[in-house]
Length: 186
Image (cartoon, rainbow, N blue to C red; front, side, top):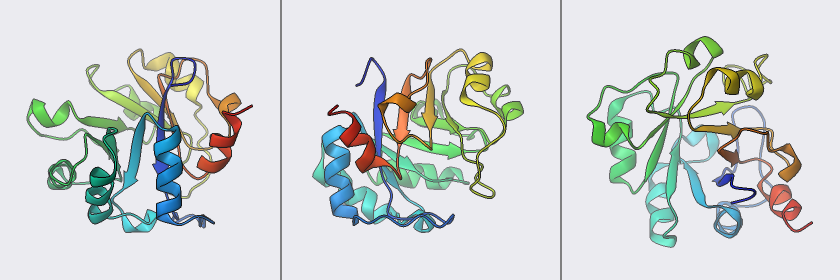
């Protein structure tokens, strides 16, 4: 944790928006374990992930693991948990599962209006990146924080500790993981 903010360190080797890491999965995983309170592992191949990598990560660390991906079906959520995830990111929807699974879901709304429709018992991730085109959303973390009074994770475009927004309960650091790690030493 940094200033009581949970650090979710993401192992991401690429993205569909043109990002490609200079480090391989193993190198990123080592950095993630070093800096992260939780480790985020992609399940979606578009971000260099898979369910097999999720299983591998579970064998390599005792830290909590977040399965990161869209997870557009409830079956994918169950598969992620069965593959070793402690938590599962679900984008743009509320799953229709039993409470035991819902307690493990972090919801990422696509818009501010979706944010206001999420039941209060969920953990929420506010991604500054628009997943339709990879650009920065018009709505800010600060706007999301005004609406969402519960647990809120700031995600994307976090290069260093100075980028952590006031009011964040957690940050999800991905593409800039190495740079963020270095900034914790200053």
